[in-house]
Image (cartoon, rainbow, N blue to C red):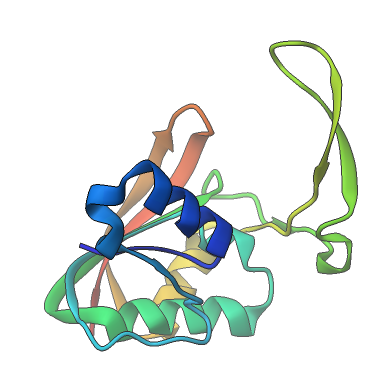
Length: 157
């Protein structure tokens, strides 16, 4: 098992909180890096919707394909309702944005992020164009942060 994130701070947190599994956490840029190991199962949640540019999305899908063992499968979960397509302006990512904290009602400021949601039609086209075959697709939830998410279970080839 290997758990990855592009953020060194997130990986350091995992090391601190779960030292017994420290060897299983790694900083990884799935757009630019490769892995020597092939996996029977890859779970990618809340990654692809953060990638707005086509070239970044395609690189991510190729990373998944290239990291799967010959009979491996991947579960890719992304924000979306299956029909709506929208994307944020990546030039505004990391700008301070005002939010109201749900529990306290207090005003807080957080760094913005990038986001792109696509329809199932676009999702499947992207997957197929990068050598991934959809086995099953649907809508699910990862509560409490993602009450509605699209998913695709895919294999390579």
